[in-house]
Amino acid sequence: MLSLQIEPPPHPPQPAESLSGPQRTVPSGPFRVAAIQTVSGPDVDANLADCAALVAQAAEAGARLLGLPEYFGIIGMRDRDKVAVRETPGDGPIQRFLAETARRHKVWLVGGSVPLACDDPDRVWNASLVFDDSGNCVARYDKIHLFGFDNGREKYSEERTIKHGSQVVTVDSPFGRIGLSICYDLRFPELYRAFGDVDLIFVPSAFTETTGEAHWEPLLRARAIENLAYVVAPAQGGVHPNGRETHGHSMVVDPWGRILAQQAKGPGIVVADVDPARTQEARSMLPALAHRTLRSV
Image (cartoon, rainbow, N blue to C red):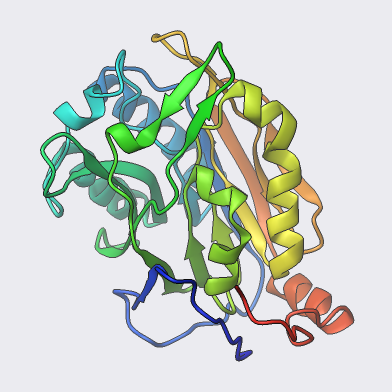
């Protein structure tokens, strides 16, 4: 594994050990991943039923590692609706759904984001949870960077209902080492550098149509190219009951920055094959990670 030296900023996110332990597995050959796209609304049960059907479809297509988008369980009529359905870490209908679904289909499942209770009754952790194929939660990442936007017509401030996370999280899996991020994190390359040597990066998202149309694809491709890693980006994609439009374009990007598969709008699955040999080839041809000389500031 490459040794990457990171100089921390004044108030850095703290790295967290993977709950699955320090052992790293390098897959011996190609495997199939899926990015699931939804258009979630305020009804948690209905959203989970939609996700169940899409996960089953992806598993039937041969995907063994799947990702759901940010807010797959609820995009409410108001921002505070997600606070009202927050769950205690380790228990709740959304978490039970993830565990049971992963176990039923014998897949690893990245639950894009789940609202988990924090010490502030008016806010939640926006947490990405990873479940293995036995239904065990093996990693949790709390979103570090919280979206803020105001162009005079649209205004968003996630800080009002979400608490900042503080830990950088990677998880070792049968598919290699996975780095976890959520949506707005995509704009902060220092987070991805802090992962160190990872094989795959997940970016479950709910990008607005306004920002997504301009920046979604180039940012995803940049993160893949910079880190010479596959990027799996499940997204919300369509017009939601609250009137918000999300950009969609869920995709899988290879370490050379090539888009392997994507879907523009609407519910669906994006399936692609990940080949570890392609990662090694890219890193051999262009050993940019080993060539780094500047420390992060």
